[in-house]
Amino acid sequence: MTTLTDATVLVTGANGGLGAAFVQQALDRGAAKVYATARTPRTWDDERIVPLALDVTDQASVDAAARAAADATIVVNNAGIGGSAPLLETSVDEVEHVFATNVFGALRVAKAFAPSLAGGALIDVHSVLSWIALAGGYSASKAAFWSITNSLRLELAPQGTQVLGAHLGYTDTGMTADLDVEKADPADIVAAIYDALEAGEHEVLADQVSRDVRAGLSAPLTALYPALASV
Image 1 (cartoon, rainbow, N blue to C red):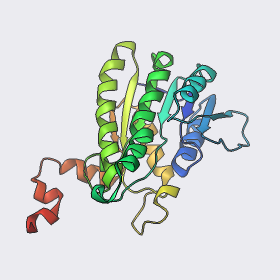
Image 2: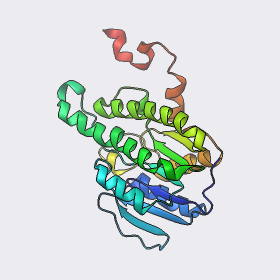
Image 3: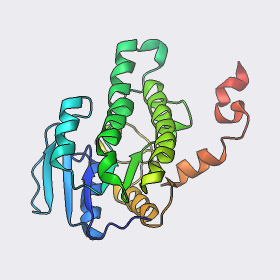
Image 4: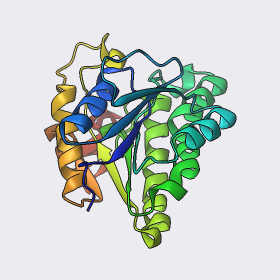
């Protein structure tokens, strides 16, 4: 079980809607300091927030951030990019670009900060699309990230690191701005994730969409993918 009270938190992808909510709610729950990271960090008007440059696809950048924020006790692996075109219509290079951020970038961060997180926590932000292939390379990357999180949870357990995997559906952020779908409020999603963190959970299904999809994973493939029924 991890508490945010007096914690030092690092959030990747902190400029966006979900990232900014992670930053603010960490402070609201008593964090002493939050490193708000991004490739080009924004300015903040709270002295408890430390802007920090971090490109998760660049090992040197990750290593520099790990040195600068060696006092972090909770890391939120939130940085990610989209890429939902059909795989057969997308170049392999483009898919590799998605994986570079969503999978290997997140793994770089986890590995670099692992020594600092003994007795602390790692939060990996996944997606309901980790479990259902509706978004090309993005879905594939989130599925891979989910598997990596499950491995990291076991590997970090001996040092007392809580690893929380967070799954969520469409959320009202810049990444989903062009989608005409129902979207959750980032504040509600982050609140559910932090609630699960402080309750000592290993995984959180942060909205009804993620709970419904997870519950249906044991169904036949034609139930998950109705288009297959007509093939």
